[in-house]
Image 1 (cartoon, rainbow, N blue to C red):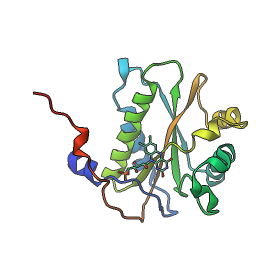
Image 2: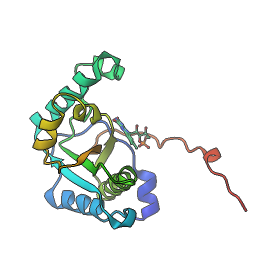
Image 3: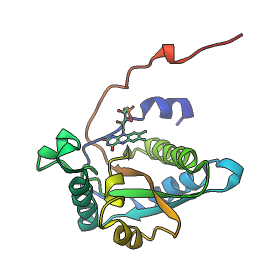
Length: 180
Ligand SMILES: Cc1cc2nc3c(=O)[nH]c(=O)nc-3n(C[C@H](O)[C@H](O)[C@H](O)COP(=O)(O)O)c2cc1C
C-alpha cells in the first residue's frame, strides 16, 4: 500500500477480535520497529511481546491500582481494559540515561503502527500502562517482561484484528507555520 495512504488510513482501534495475528505478520511489525531511525543510531529500545492474556490482565490491574480513583473515569467500567483485550501487546522499554530515548521509541512505535496498518492489523499506541511500572510490582513486571537493566517502560502498542471503525481525527492546519 502507498505510504501516504497507509498513514491516512491508520486509526487507534479499541475493539479487537480474539483471533491472534499470524507470526509472520508480527515479525514484520517488529522488524519495522527495529528499522526505525534513532539518534546516533543508538537504538535505545527493547520490545517485549506479550500474548499471555493473564499477564496482560495483570498489568491492567496493576495500572488501575496504581492510578487509583483519580485515574481515567473509564476505570469505573468493570469491562474496561487499558489493552482493549487485544491479543498481542508490545511493550517498548527505553534506555533511561539517553537523551533521545522517548523520541526514538516514539518513532519505533509509529513504524509498528504503520506496518500493522499496511498489513490489515489494527493497533493503538498506549501510554496508560505506565503506572504499572511505577508501583510496588514495577520491578517484578519489568523482570517478567525481560526489560533490560537501566531500561524502563516508555510506551506500548496493542495489535489485533480490529472491528471498530472511526473517522480520522481532525487536522489542525494552524499547527503549521510556513516561513519563506
Ligand atoms: C503517546 C501516546 C499515548 C497514547 N495512549 C493511549 C492510551 O493509553 N489509551 C488509548 O486508548 N489511546 C492512547 N493513545 C491514542 C490516542 O488517543 C490517539 O492517537 C488520538 O486520539 C488520535 O486518534 P487516532 O490515533 O485514531 O488518529 C495514545 C497515543 C499516543 C501517541
